[in-house]
Length: 174
Image (cartoon, rainbow, N blue to C red):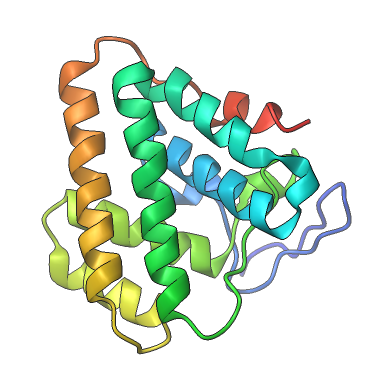
């Protein structure tokens, strides 16, 4: 059973939440999670202008060639999920040091779908998206995530720099 710890901000973990470390994904995917959170925060709290941090973080993490494309494809995948879902997408704040270490069920399903695509498990990715999209059409979201995965892979193949820590990306909002 998970510890029902409270974050410094007072947020309590739910049974469906998990720790970021439990995702066991490469830094590039954790960076995508932070970029995704920044885009969502920008919509939920427009004065934060968190989209600017998402774009600059993508540039610094994936370089000036792939960063803007990965940011755009992340936003596209989110939009396809949003258009399919009927309820809100639950996310954690990228700017709270405690909350950003916790992954919501929705974030986890999004990231697992992306990871499954990367690993060639399209059927598993589809199942994650069916759950995330509440049984609605997942084809547009799956297509968008496949394009995102291809860009991440291309970035990794062409990039000799090491990926920036997602923690650095989230601190730009503060």
